[in-house]
Amino acid sequence: MTSLEMTTPVQDKGWCLRLYVAGQSPRSMSALQNLKAICETHLAGHYDIEVIDLMEDPKLARGDQIVAVPTLVRKLPEPVRKIIGDLSNTERVLVGLDLRPRE
Image (tube, rainbow, N blue to C red):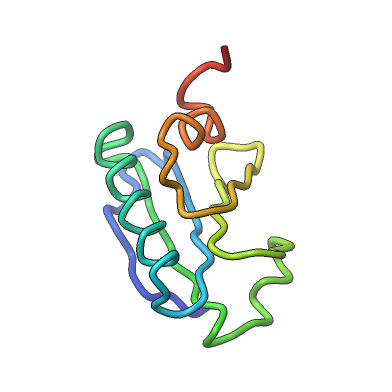
C-alpha cells in the first residue's frame, strides 16, 4: 500500500485513521495538518494515520469506496466512518469520529 507518512504508532490499538489525498494539493495538505492537530489534541498517543496518495495508485480508492478527496476513513474503532473535506471544521470532525456527542 502506498503511504506518504505514518504518525504516532497506536499503543493500545486505539484509533486507526486513513486519509486519502490527491497529491500535494493545498486541500490535501490542509486536511493532513488539520487531522494531525485534532489527533494530538484529542487522541494523543493513541492513533495511527496512514496517508494514501491516489495520484500514485488510484486503484486504492476502491477498497474504501472513495469518491472524493480528501477523505478521512476511521478504520478503528469500528464502525467504519468517513469524513470528506479538508477537516477544517473541527466540531464536525469530532462528531464524525464519535469523539464528541451530537447535539
